[in-house]
Structures are given as C-alpha cells and as structure tokens.
Length: 195
Image (cartoon, rainbow, N blue to C red; front, side, top):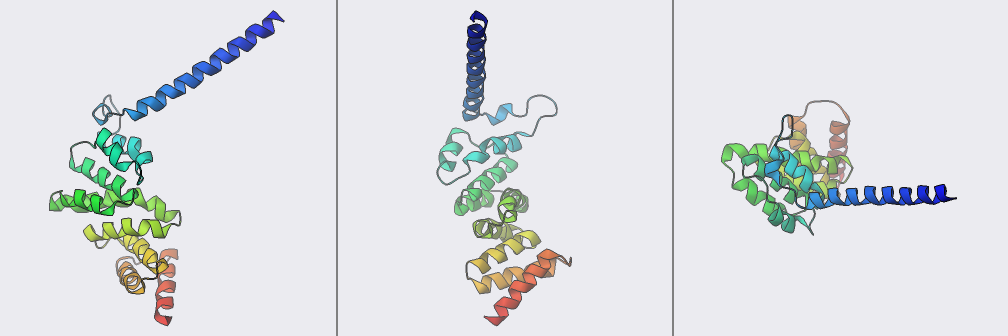
C-alpha cells in the first residue's frame, strides 16, 4: 500500500513539474526579444523570428499593445513584417503607412511579405477577409497575379462588380496557366457580364 501512495505522490509531482515547465515557456513568449533571435548558428533571421512570435497577436485587439511591448527589428524587413502583422489585424492604413515609410525600391518587397502572411487566409477560402490585404499588395506590386485573383474574388463576394472585374481581368492578363484559378476567374467574369 505504501508503494502505491509513493507512486501517486511521484506522479502528481511530475505532473506539476511538467505543468510549471510549460508555464515558463508561455511566460518567455510574453517577453520575446527579437535581438536575441539570431544568436547561434543556423537560427532564423531576427525579423522572421519576431514575426513568428508576434503572429498570434496580429489581431485587432492585441496588435497595438504587442507592437509597443515588442517592436519589430529596425530594418526594412522588420517594417515589412510589422506591416504584415497590422494587415492581418485588419489595420490596413497602419500597414500602408509602414510600407510608405520604406524606400521606393523596397515597397514591393514589403508587399510580398504582406502577401505571404495573408495568402493562407485567402487559400483557406476567406476571400472577404483577405481582400483588403490583397488590395494592399496590389497597390505596391500591381502585377502580382495571386493578389489580383484574391482581391477580385473578394470584391465579387462583397458585391463590387466593377472592382472585381478590374482585378480579375488584370489577373488573366498576368497569369497564363489554364487551371482552376483561371477557370474561376472566367466564371466570375461571365457572371458579372450577365448582371
């Protein structure tokens, strides 16, 4: 009987130890410092490490506070990832301001970072939510065919036929593959012709 009591106490102690260890990891995430992200060989660049740690907070409620607590690395890439975070949070004007502050030849690259961050939203089927992000990308990279496609589909779903037509026709000029993307774009353009 004594053995069972000892085994039970040992189990509870180990469970508590694992639970407390997990809590320490969560607390460490609250105080992430991007300047330490690039230490050691083979580690991620500080900007990518910062974005990965920040990504769960790229929402309308937490994005501003988290940016104050843990600002992005001071670089062109840091500004691009910060813009991506604001765009995911739906704060498109703030994202645009960050991109506009970059040198002109860096803006399209920043738009590419924003696209990569928002593309998973569009691919998941939420073109309405991804639409403003994709339109931001198109502002700086006008021939980005996937951003044009998603922006067009978003405008179509929102009932803005003129903007949908403009984006989808531009998509078809820049994307020459005969696949599901082009077929979907043509179907929507045909529907718009009937309206």
